[in-house]
Length: 454
View 1: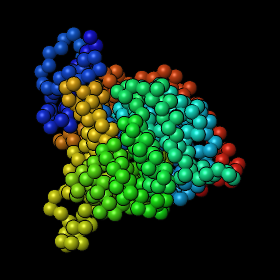
View 2: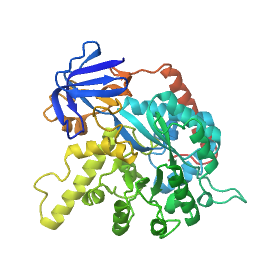
View 3: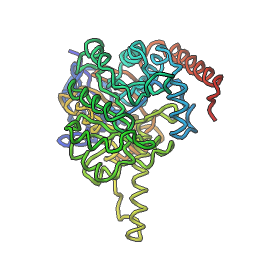
View 4: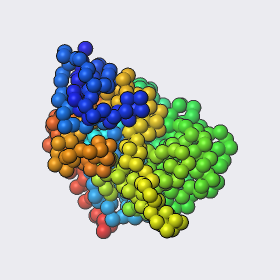
């Protein structure tokens, strides 16, 4: 029996029945959390000294286009309209399967390095099965827990070809994945659908894709926002057809009218906010506060490392700070003063990147909190580091002050993926070299075609 005991740590369990422990233990057995309490006796286990450490559940990155990792920073100055033209109609068309593989592998490893144990990889640059298989291979090789959301490319159509908005999601390819590398619905890497939705497809295509997801029992995730909808009134028609429910995940949603937002909430849809990128590229203000007012919480994603950093703590802070600012401004306008106390406590932001991510994936019984019986996905933070010490409020320390520099160890399914500040991965230098070569070639090729970044 493989056992690990983290002893005498500050524990933020995110489980209401356990709470926070200033000096507690976490026992891991055979890949699962066995106990969380003070004074666990497990002398036969690997003992990890948790003094001056904070243990939290593994973070869940609810939305990222990992295939863009080799283009880090290249799109930092693009608006959303430029991104559509230069990325989807430009750079994306130049990717070979090997480019998808190394970007996905390196991006997933970076997520582990930053404390994310689960990644929702929203892969919409897979024009061939070989591209898809390369992405899945990268995720599996990285060792991260992942939901591979299979999407479809968005190039400009060639003469005689239909626009991507008129192309249904490929059933045959989805069935191939379910019969092959992603057959295990409880495996380390599972399948979801990254569909176009009514904002980016015709009504006929939306109906097809929503029915496909429901028939196969898969999450249907889609972008909502960025220019006019391809199918105005499409959501209402999908709701009337009974195709909207808890398996539907809406990304962004900035332009959803209040009435429609409430209908989607009432039907159980989940919402993934990518706060930093939404404000940078022009989607609009994130809908964090609009959701909270209606009694639901968002999940948080990075979105694009071609634009910004892959650190989920930073994304949660941006969401929290932005919404507090909006709330403060509204209070000044309506009451003539700021609120007497903060409108959103720090613990709320930690929920967005742990328990809420698990709920969106329908895996709240398996991940998202340090609860006995759940999979042992956890992060050890060095609270003795100068930027965190001394710790008065552990939750505030984690949410408001923790960075990549403080992520000491990461465990996924009971296995250490990072220890003592170092990723446990072979050949990292060679992988970085492959990533650099891929990015350099892609940038050189697109700049020859006149799509250079500003």
